[in-house]
Length: 230
Image (tube, rainbow, N blue to C red; front, side):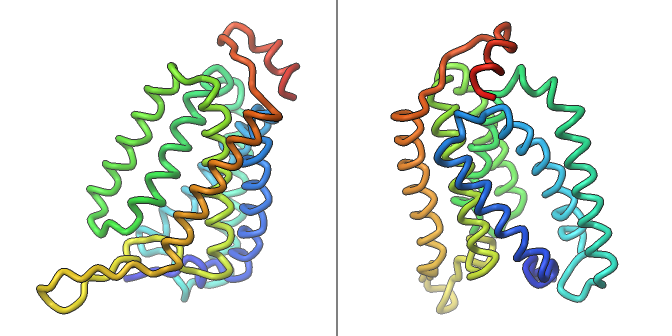
């Protein structure tokens, strides 16, 4: 079954779109300045998103789902997100840069590889890109904080916009036409999302490096770092 998350979420999806756009603006243009707050946001969003994705991928949630089920999942996703942000926040602070790098890598991979129909290959590719980003984060601490937060913000903004206009890159984005003839049709809207994310990432990174340059730190400087960024 091809599931339409916007149809399944209904009005909740529109509200989440506004939240994604607002958070995306903060991440993209001042992310490094409020990096600890944004770290907690990430820890909230990951279980929040998984709470929706798991039942949707198991065909338990679609456009015909009852309002009660959708409301229940919505409440559960918020509770799990809050618990994650609260209890995992302390531990995650020590690995902040690696988490930002991994999330940014995964976000970029999902957007760029969303049109792959083979879910196994797509999942492995996303994990590889995320893992590579985590590995490289140790060498590019300063740029991970700025480019990473800008990329995450760009992804959130584009995904938030897609809840209103649709067309976000997915496994149905690329169509192969004319039987055996390889004719790939990529909708202009999908290209616009990718281009928009690229532009926002570049502009956001420039603004952050220019006006909010993050300071390098070690994991032993947690208290001083919090004072600087909070």
